[in-house]
Length: 497
Figure 1: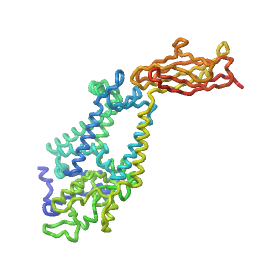
Figure 2: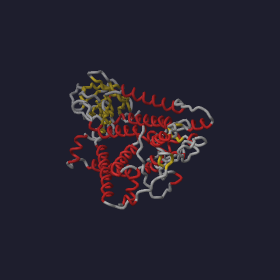
Figure 3: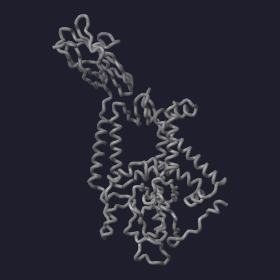
Figure 4: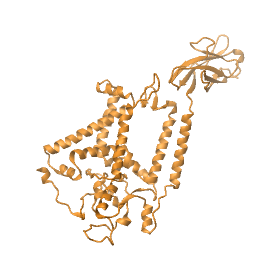
């Protein structure tokens, strides 16, 4: 009875066979009040190539996110076999065949730089396609809306359900929707923690209550944020919280493609009666199908707007209407403001993808990416650091000779145990001894994918002391491959001249 009571009256038609929607752009800047309670947006399901593209990308993105932690990659005995792993306990980042050590954090920096430049390039070419297709907020919101539609129906049914008084029908639909939302949010939070420990072990420990406290904390935080941001805040995240809409204004120009209402073709707009001529009027019949389809709650016909995420669902909605009324598709399309102006002057549209800014971004991406790739392909698998004892700074032995103590840290990045020969460069009279080894042994063994410390003493006879400080270098040589690593230090004598 409640649904019948709140059923809307028959709608008027914008054209023959085309319903006129009563959708209002509640999130448009001119109608949005800062402290006003959020007005819910009920995006209508549309069908078309852009909607299909969003379904495909959403499935791929979610599949990668949820499945990737469970993929295995053999790295040999003693090394984790999870393909993608951020191993804080052992200070490693694994990505398939790539292994990043703490000393190589600059690779992460380079990756972030390349990602940022790629985002700049894509934005300067196609506007905010990242926001419309790839942003996690968009992907999860799209998924949550699909679940909402599954329980409550499409736009009109959801509006009717929200207006209806509470009943068993309304209750089970609302409870079911939120229950599935919570399951998706929990899966999202659970998948995130799998990237930081072995996924199979974490799942087992998590369900048996044996996981680390931090796992439960991050699971709870990410479950909550996913549920709130994708389920209840939605377009508010993009409008108020995200800085990207403000940044993009500096990255696009009049020739950047974005979702555009071709005002030169659509105006003057108005309803169209069957048999009426199209002469002297625009193709827009003011059906508001584009507004009804918009998940951001705006009217694309108002022009470029900060709130628009370029999801192109309004294009699918408008193309469907154009097909019904027998007019050419593309009233709303990916276009540039430059082309709108050119058509107003009876000039042919042009699409220039090679522009100074796009060339600059492409060159920077190639340069940074090439530098990173070269460095990665030629990086050393052996590293050496020396730390001289500071307290005491030196020790004067009974025979007058001076001794300095050092801690050598050898980093073996290979998957095999390696033996290295240690030598020094400095005063020829310097004598080297490795603590724990015999007097003549200078061979140091380091396990696979490990860092190991060695205590070393260097002694300079009294007759050779002729300066307060002597230059000194330590060199280790891989006895199998011949690869070397060298580090500079100093030898302190305490001699005052």
